[in-house]
Length: 144
Ligand SMILES: [Zn+2]
Image (spheres, rainbow, N blue to C red):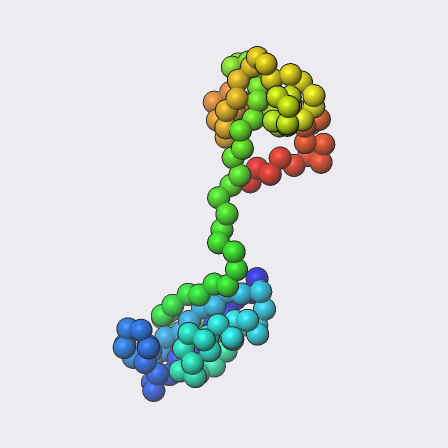
């Protein structure tokens, strides 16, 4: 994702608020410059002045102070951290937590007939549980 800055001039007014856009700019975040520009055109038509790579460029290093009018982003919304159910052999501290697989067993083949199931975040925070390396052989459990 890249950020582009689009400045407005004295002749420009916001089509939504009706306010003058003099000395203001829009910040647009998208995969590339072309998509930034396309979004800007879709939202403001031709009612903007110039496209820059940064606020520093747009303001000539701050010599022309401007305020941000709007911030637009193309792309997926920020996903909340994954917090799946995990299994532990007992409600004790310091045990590993395991991936729940099909058939009432863990990813490493342990039976889940006993033990406890809960959110991974709680296993980590409340029970200081560690990740089972056999359930997540790649080393990642998707936690962020
Ligand atoms: Zn395991």
